Length: 224
Image (cartoon, rainbow, N blue to C red):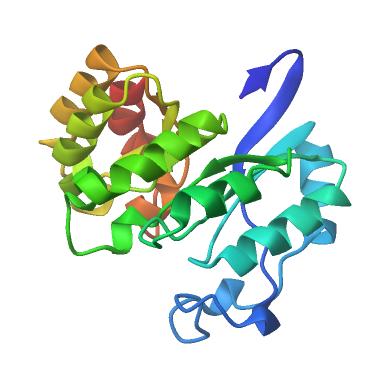
């Protein structure tokens, strides 16, 4: 993404395994990335690809990790902002969010919706005050969703037209199974009826081993 004359990678992660809150990141399930990834691992790639800035995104559902990422951002010149995590179900969630947002490097929050069994979790009345707190703090909402969440996300967008929303990883279409619908129709509807933005990211992961440009092309065409 290019903005204000800068080339920006809108979605990258850092993690340090000894922090202990990356439950999904096991040696068995993800052997190739089961190690620390920190700024020194990315700097060369950014220079090679002529990327000026990045957005650092949470990878663990803890506020401790959000604070860790903010600390990394404070000493990493290429990190333009952090999308963190907060416990939306905590009784004092609005206050927690306001406190986190005191750090100007925090630009958004991302509840890990893809891991929640309730597809309409984000529509619960008890979540509404949290969303209002995000608006008051000028934060964006990163929607980490899969196709099964898109009907609820569409309703959420209708309820909160003034909340900046970014859909992560194109809502993870089932590319490896060559499934296009209803994902394509739902994404087109969201594009037409809301101000949501979409990151064209993570598609190779959804395509699986052996992917190529032609495998991704139909899905990218829908997004464009």
